Length: 201
Image (tube, rainbow, N blue to C red; front, side, top):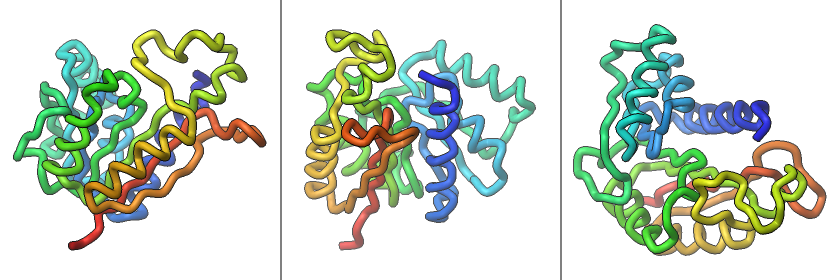
């Protein structure tokens, strides 16, 4: 994946969070911390929680934050756990971000993630980015292989929009979609984002 696409994705997510006044953010599946680093370096963000099921990823994240001079910082918390599990301590945040994370989850666990994130945590905003499978061949990925060996699935734009639309309708959110990166006239952009906004009931 070109580093420029990675940076464009991070910039878009941070810009979206700032423009919608999301100061308290959950980074779900934070990994080694690329988004956490971007958020922690911006004083706009008041509370940042990184959650990951991998202890090694969290150790790498903590090391990267320290190397960047961003730890210790009372705004930042790293937590070990799964975002497929409801946790009352993660409720009430302004936003939750799943940055190139959902495709690493077995499809039969997507309903658990939906219940935890949208029904239990209930952030005002949810941002999900994921690869657009339609662009794999343009990136040199053979048709029979995923873009990354750790991916459990990769969605086309229509499949992503159908899943996200169902999640939004069931949980009182509205959703809009955008592409990330260069855009092919028929295949779209290599990465795609869904922005969910909770509707007041």
